[in-house]
Length: 82
Image 1: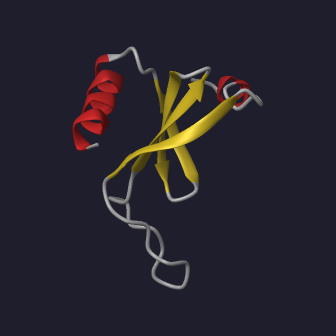
Image 2: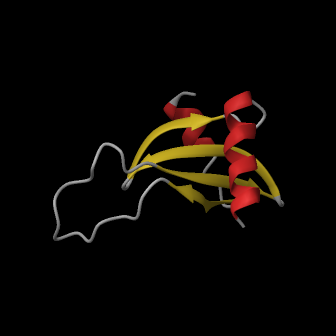
């Protein structure tokens, strides 16, 4: 997904929600973010997940379509973890 599409997904009606994290975020005074420290945030609009952001610390790595096989798998992991 292009950066324009990502910015469009950040409109006032949408808000990112923490979905799942591979590891806890280290405090700022510790070593740089580990490559394995990846988290996922669900972007919701009117109660529906419209996108899943793969994040490494504060950096956006990619956007995953929640309707894709990978998106469904991530959302299913979140639902079973809760």
